[in-house]
Structures are given as structure tokens and as C-alpha cells.
Image (cartoon, rainbow, N blue to C red; front, side, top):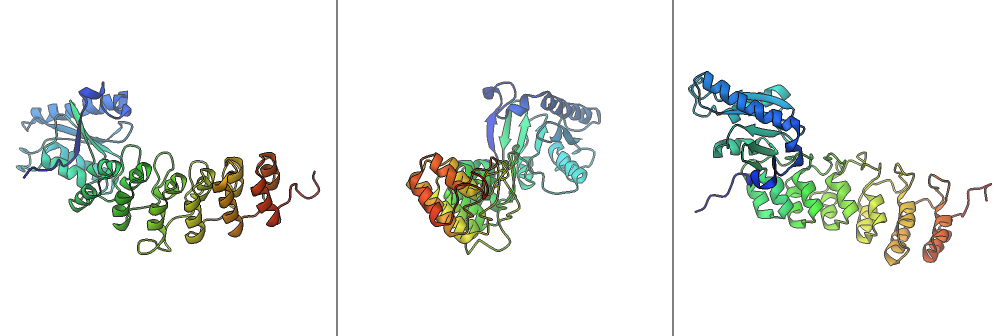
Length: 340
């Protein structure tokens, strides 16, 4: 029987100077790779096996380093990679090394790759290739069966890549419902944000991933403890606001029915969900239904935007007649009291 790879392997040489992630071509990464070679040279000087490794962060800053200590410790498992992993765990005071990279002087053996996977390392890098976490890679492909196998093999559920994306966030980005369901039902963190402040819950709203949101919000996996409504996207918005913007009617319906999102929340642009549905919507059937849903669930028709424009005035200015009628029926005014 053919053994499946412990990590997904990619050639560096085929991808340019330093590999799949552009960050690996930066001076910081050149320095990290040089330190791994320095650890190899140290191992040789100490009479040990000719291997060295470092653990580095996403910028290439070295967190920990180690030479091989197989001979020094009379331990066949004291490979440089595993020694560097242990050193990084001690330095950071945690077991999970998600978002970090293991850089070796040569290709890691199968056991070291397994050890890297079990502590959630994002990448392994060596002189002519790299290996990525099977969990995030499987989520990007939508391979639910491989996701389950990786989790059963010990991959941490919320393993993060160099962009701080978890496997669940990758599944949301690519629209893989089955993969997302596996992760959510195993307890994946729906609130963990990446370097763009996207979380699985927030992005599922923006992308209209209604089935995924139902898994997050409704039994058997939904609970009162999640989502974290204090987490906002990079615009200071909730999952609801971009769902209204993009006309995701069923997503809006679910969020209004099953979540506790503040329907009148202002984002940093001084838009509520209602204002965004009008300002960025097309006034068609989907956005008209979204406005109806918002008003039915307590959206205030008299909250103005940052320029003092009320929803009714905005709808009329954009020629959204049906939406304007809904706002009038809900008590919406065209101007702030005392102003024309």
C-alpha cells in the first residue's frame, strides 16, 4: 500500500529564487537559511551528524535553532529539526507552533515531518524544496477525507499558515462546504483571525457561505459561546454588513434569525447594514428583500451615514423606488429633524 505524504511537498527551484511564498525570498529568510547551515556546521564541529535547523516566524526572524544531537545525546531521535522544535516550544512557552516555519539544512526525514505537523508548523523549508501543512492544503482543495486523516494523525485543529489562516478559514475562502463541516464539527475556532482580520465567521458572511454559517450558528455545532460578536473585520464591520452589500439574501436571513449581531452596528465608514445595502446595492430584488428583512428585524431607518444622509434620501437619490417605499412604511424620514 502506498504511504500518503506527511506534508504536501513543493520544489523551490521550480518557483523561483526561494519558493512558493514570496516572503521566503526576503533577506530575513536568507538569514534564517544561513543560520540552519551554521547549525549544521556546528554539529559537524561537535562530532555529530551533519544537520542543522531553525524555527522562524513569518518574517524570517529566528525563534530557536539547534544542531543535530544524535551523537551527543546518544539518542537516535535527537535530529536537528526536532531539537529546534523543542527549543522553540521552550522559548515561546507553548506547544502550538502555528504560523512558524521549520528551516533545515537538508530535507527533513518522515519522522521530523510528522513532528512538525503535530505541533502545527506552517511550512518546512530546505535548500531545494518546502513542505506545507497537509491540513491547510487539504482545506484549500476541499478534501474532507484528507482533512479527517490529518486530524486523526495529530495535526492541530487550528493550524495556521504564514498568513495566519486556519484550515477552516481556507475552506471558507474556497467555498468547500464539506471540508468546513468536518472542521466545524471537530470544534475548529470560528473566530480566529488572519493577518487581514478575516475570521471564518466574518468571511462566511461576506462570501455568502450560508451552509457554513448554519453549522456555526445552529445545533448541533452552534452554541451560545460562539461566535464572538466583538470580533470585527478590517473595516470595523460585522458578518452581516458585507452580506447585505453583496446581496446574499439567504445569508442575511440566517444571520438575522440565528445570530445576535447588532443590526444597527456602524462600521468605520459610518455605514450600518441598511445603509450599505442601499449605498452598495443595485436596488434589485435581492437588495430589496434584504432591506425588508433588516427593517423587520429592527434596523433603524433614521440612522444617517457619515455625511448625515438618511437611508430614505439615499434610496431616492439612487432611484431605488421599492426600497424607498419600504423605508417610508417603516417610519423613515428623508432628512434629519430641523434640516432640509
